[in-house]
Image (tube, rainbow, N blue to C red):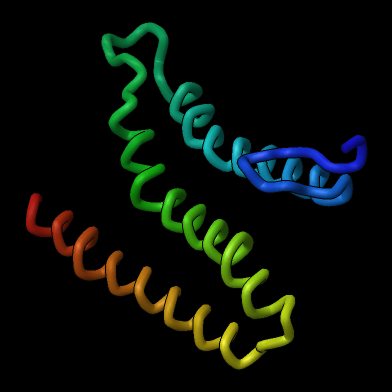
Amino acid sequence: MPEKYFIFMFRLRKPYVLERLVYIVIWLIVFLVPVVFTFWLVDPDAEEKFNWQIILHIWGFTIIPFFLLFCLNNFWLAPCFLFRKKYVRYAISVLLLVGVFIWVDTVFIRWNMVNSI
């Protein structure tokens, strides 16, 4: 077992451990950028406090959909289709997945935001 590790319930060889760690670091940076910028924008002398609702709004409507697309592509679509040289199925799956995410974003998220104003 020295050359295999368990990360996120997946059995991985050594080269994949570094890849997963890079993914984790990049996504942590992406999720922390709104927190850092919001913290810098808060005036310490004003009555206004750090607002987590803004952060959750940014995460929920911009970052999490891309994170889900990344995870679905990297851990499901690519191993099932792309790495097995089923390029047409992979392309169709990616287009359908992106289409579903655009539809969900347009119909549910943006429409609810406009109606709640």
